[in-house]
Length: 501
Image (tube, rainbow, N blue to C red; front, side, top):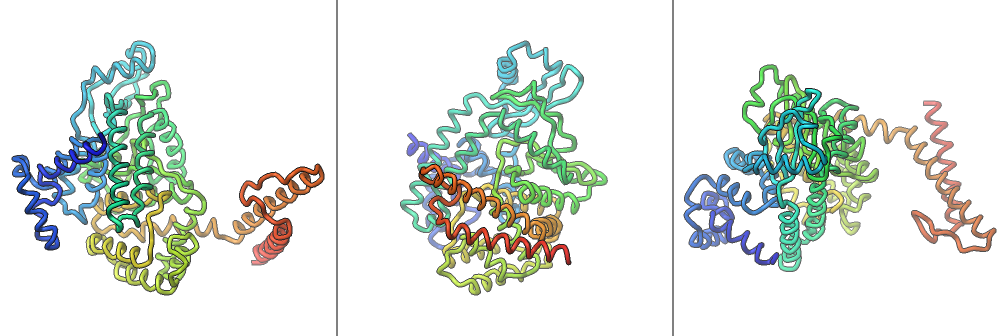
């Protein structure tokens, strides 16, 4: 069944001339031009209607949630695909065909187990419709205006079918296209599939909105609507109404008093602060999920996809960004090797040289003067040269960074990602890599070592096997004691240095 759906998806794209469209032949190498001409023989009448972006959007809409989300991601990269193409795909963000309001009210009423009028005095038609759910404007009994998100009928079955197709496509890519293995297609498909399945329980989204709302409030670069918990169920979710205009509309950026550079910077800084400072971030920040108002207010909605990264990944990200900001390519290269992103068989100096070739030409230049398509092509060549592979644990982070940077460029064509990132990264470096924090880290390591020694001693006293180590099973007590001694010595030295400047 999955194979038939995969073949069917390819057939839909071919019939719409959306796979290798005739309009793009001038940009294709000779072999793809020849293949494009062959595929056009199979194209249907719909291939002659509209621009390539319009044809692709229509095809993706009919192919299901996963295909629609791909279109949403592509729509944020007008700098790579062209403004017209990106604009044609923009309707996939929140302008899909809605389902009947009566079905939505029935879902909500079944979930609250009482008449819907007990909770809402008004419940209007859909104001936005996306791939997984649609949103309705409603009014609570206490007069508050809210947005009620309701899952599409049978969406669980649709997503399960799409996940099966995505898994099959990833497996075929891994088997048949050796070049694709650097992108770890199977791991990528598993990560995307997992995030999709989590989107189908809106109680989890409510918890995500609540958590990220607390995180966003700490800096104020963006905010989240409040959760109305009595209006939350597995298939529906109620949030306070988001102020401002949806960024997916052209008029949103024409509001009087809007500071577009500050808006673009706030979006980038808000995302980085979430990821670096808290290890949790909104992982679906396309225009359809953002509301803006003057001078630079941003309200994010739709918390179905949340990303999380651990302390190590946060440090690697911060140090890589900080190294680029200081143009310390050697340190950036070293962090890549420390993180295992580049195999140890390669030269740190050679990798630093390659990074310099990427970084130097783009510093001090505005976004409109940098070809993102050319830059991505160069980065892909470097990753191949140094045997770098996609990291599954970073998929959502990397995908969101691409989306946020693309949205920021559309808000402000002169956006400088490095200038936007600098205060957030500088703050993280000053806090986390300060002498005080190093002492705290060393002390924590020492405490852990003492606890391990205590467990070993207790087990020996009782004549029992040593309990398993939570982080390094089977560690030799001699090396453990040596590590403890070294850790405590370093801690004393750092404390002394911190107290004496």
